[in-house]
Length: 275
Image (cartoon, rainbow, N blue to C red; front, side, top):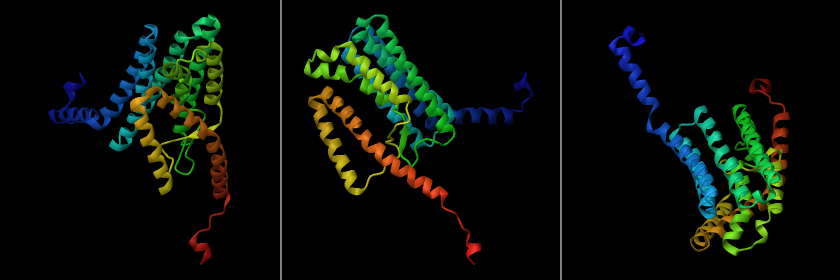
């Protein structure tokens, strides 16, 4: 056997290499990703039990873990292809399958097969969005410091928009939002935005001025205070604020794109040529 051919020193060295692969810096981001996957899957269980508030809460917990795992990977220097692929698979379940099942059991089931087809379309577009994101990341074509925008609507944002009618029904008891046709319209909008080329903000790369950070801090504090008393309203308000930023992002992205193209087209001269 291979182990019999190794010297004690070689075997010990291989053992240490395997232990280094299991370091805390590499385990923590993947553990957070798996917690997000478990949260998204648990939302399906709550939906089948018709416990809508817990189902929606589980998906938003998955969003929280989705934000934490990426930041943990960058802080700990644990960015790798395995983590990226695991994150995409978890996102497909948590923000593609999970919201689709929740909305289907909540209202789309009233439409029978048509409602199920609408849920499948949302899942399919989520998969396409994540696959394109992986390809862009591999080619270094995604969001950057000079162009801090995603291509298409991210799946967590699409999941939040899908769950907006449930959030409104929890807080305001509005029966109209449970109309399956309204949810089909939301599915159509989010699905098109996910597979489109529409630029959307990337919080990872967005940079604010000093005054901008002050405004962001004030809004964040206000939303945190509001969340204590009106959690569902706060989540709905956050989603609406995100949607309101998209037209401004589209305009700014065109300016940023033109600036990048102009900088790429400018000739570069070496110092030797000027001498």
